[in-house]
Length: 126
Image (cartoon, rainbow, N blue to C red):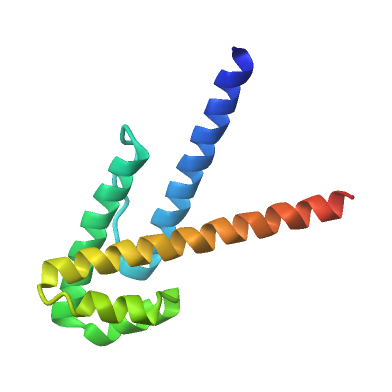
């Protein structure tokens, strides 16, 4: 039973570190302020983050579209998916979809980097 509790704490800690890393990256790129990321569930965290990020995206759509397009390119969000998002028409739907795409892409990059460093560390120990 102790092993299960320790294992769950380790998994929870990894999720929190992943959330913090995501918030740091999005904060640097979009000027987001930190918010209370310690919510009851991971899905609630991502819902809150998507809403906050979509507000910033709406602001950029209305005031600095070039910056938004540059950020989408820099983050490497799929071009076809971005085009489809912009075809949704309503600004709220566009910004919510773009926020989802950005969050998912950043998570992919975080997970890839962690896996790369984990494999690299294992090879160095051998």
